[in-house]
Length: 308
Image (tube, rainbow, N blue to C red; front, side):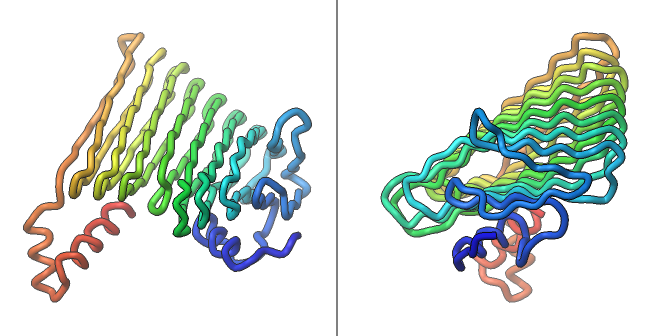
């Protein structure tokens, strides 16, 4: 594995909680190059030959194993599109840790667009964690545009944790999912924007099989002059259960748009959408300030608890 500098190591800690070489399968990408890769007996990672990216194949029956595929960018002006495909066999139980960190100290924009596609086998369980983080004092933007496609076989489960808490100037997240009978999708999105940042999140989930279910929840905070849009659509094409929720705190001159989309194409499709946008309650601030916190410290405590 190529030696990483202190900035690259810090980014890996932020997006993947990596303080050393991870156990199990991994591919670490830095400035458009793979700087370290390991496959295991049950998880094979190979490079694509037609476009930039990888194929990750997980053998049927693989249990309690993980694969890390973090990306870091530290060169100003670098722009890349990466395609990663995951083929998860039947009866698996695995964890996939992804994410991208950009440190931009230059004048040019830096951008990473990661397109991840998942084929989840029958009866398999996948936990997918994706964190985005930006840092650096340059004028150039830190841009991340993740695209996620999920195709779930019968009775499979996928839990997705999407977090973007600091430093990303512009992001346009697009997620689509198709669920077969008995499949279950759970999405938990956590997002904070500040300055003039913009964050768009679009979900299109199609419940195609009887007993399929989806629970898509976003919690977000918009500060300063930032803008957010949460656009969640669930389509029920069979007897199913779907729930989508947007819960947001707005501060300063921030703007938030929540767009619900429910489409029931059979009589037994049960679909629900909830949305709440509001400011921090004054009594919450007062209570914490009576404990000795300043107003700013109280706000931070409330926000940190809200985004957990």
